Length: 638
Ligand SMILES: Nc1ncnc2c1ncn2[C@@H]1O[C@H](COP(=O)(O)OP(=O)(O)OP(=O)(O)O)[C@@H](O)[C@H]1O
Image (tube, protein in one colour):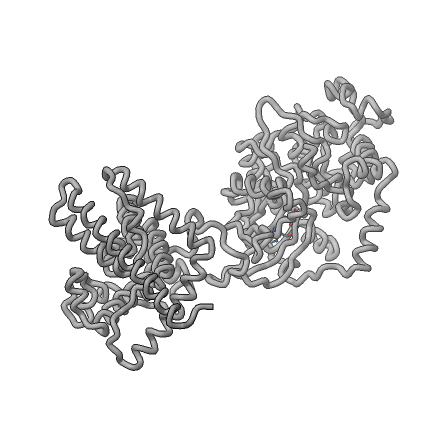
């Protein structure tokens, strides 16, 4: 081991070599700049800044070669990117730590009122924070200033040279922007809670470049030599005022941003919501009632099931989001407010407008209390349902899971179609889809007979079933299993023939089975021989429950039906009675034993044939619902 004196000598020699190398590089740099074409006062000026920065940060100039302006810009960008990359690779953590140490030292020195000259490492220690500030500022500039692109280039230049906050402020922050920002000032009504007393900031006076007050003195951008002439304390004050001004300005900009800027901020985190209670759990997700912590707005939060998330984002979730976003801009379709990610980024939530009732629960309650919707109310419900469906079909969207538990009713009598978990876009010509869609009791005969080329009539059949349910308060065709279901339909509506439904004999299901010949249409009996539904209403119901899909009513035809224009007329939604909403009460998940029992009950509905089908389609028992089953797609199969 070398004696300490030799170690010190070696260290000194190393430092000298380092200093010489530094001088040599600085000299080379100066020569290069002198050689530079068109070098004038401005260039000298900027060189002076750069020299100073070099002194301060001791980094990066040695990468700089003589280039044309274009190449040089590329080189700037390249270095800028590389620098960012470094910070991601662990350099940042190190710099943060050194920055923290330096800040502590600085606080200590400040306390003792010492006049020690500022060190380069102090600046480089603050650099990551400074960059974050610049990036934030860029973000806000992008929001507030349509000419941002031009300024962005300036910012990149500045970042690259790691200059003092004074210059950064000059390039990034402009007083005019404050005026620009005012255009976004929300009123208290628009964003209750977004502007809190603590956040009220007064900015323009403080950051005015023309401010001649003592504080303003430190906000101006002194020349490099002027800055060097300032005492350490003055320099510190100068930096602090600039930073404070910047912080206040940032706060003001944040306060003036609209609550949510989806395009800029991406998905918010579920932590932004408080869970009020659990509403329900379906096949495709759990639904909670949540409160936006910023605005206190109540929403429905549906956590999408992410069973196959290891293989990427599940296609079922993607479809649901996609279809809802496409169709959701209609009064009778539930509106998706935003998409949220879970705390660990492993869950996806849909934040939707909260609608107080689901129709299935409501009909159950009414049935228990011996209540019914009046004919006028039935018409209003049907009009709203048809109007939402007409909108969807015009957008080439098939819902494929219409049923009363997927229809919501607001306190103000507005019906909303929900649950787009099975929705698909269809086209012309039709593509083949799976026939195993739509919860069994609402599934159309063509699907039950195995057609794979289907379209909007599958939804219209479900609408027919729903219309009957609005009147009867219970599902119309409650078959057990697919075979049981189709038999039930034929029993009520009559067994079709080629003349009633051309092409029926070509369907796989028809070929495979033999059906008893039931006489035509026994449906009327179910409606107490017309006491619950008059002839006109019956014509509409028959139009919707037409066996041949080609002859089934479309949503537009149904909306034009005379049932809606004859007395009693549809009642305005706001005149609907109000009901206590089940969804506002906490619905705990069923305990394990109860759940098992529930599953057993469900399986009891399933005949051997259906059980075989379930196996074939890889359906788990818990996906079997009362009233048949609804299937979760296996995206690899369809
Ligand atoms: N926007 C909403 N507001 C209030 N409650 C809602 C909302 N959306 C859904 N719900 C409640 O959650 C239940 C399940 O929601 P949804 O149908 O979307 O889930 P799902 O998993 O697709 O169910 P399933 O496939 O079994 O029909 C609904 O029946 C309703 O009670």
